[in-house]
View (cartoon, rainbow, N blue to C red):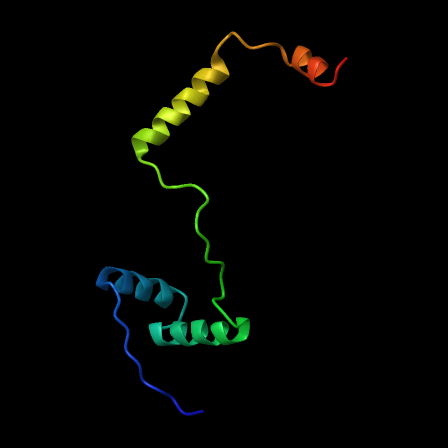
Length: 92
């Protein structure tokens, strides 16, 4: 089958890291791109899910506050025993 030459513009650091990983798998970058391209054709689209997160990204500080709030709520003594909770839930 005839070959076509193309060019890509990639971030240098990412490209170098990808080449190292691919070498450890016994293939070069061109072989990996050929596999990816064949999979696009076979799948009639990208060979993996592309999704938008349901949750917006938050900062480390926001995440820390949410975890602390959850932990504090879990450890506070104002709750009720599990048996009482389930009795109430099940109308016993």
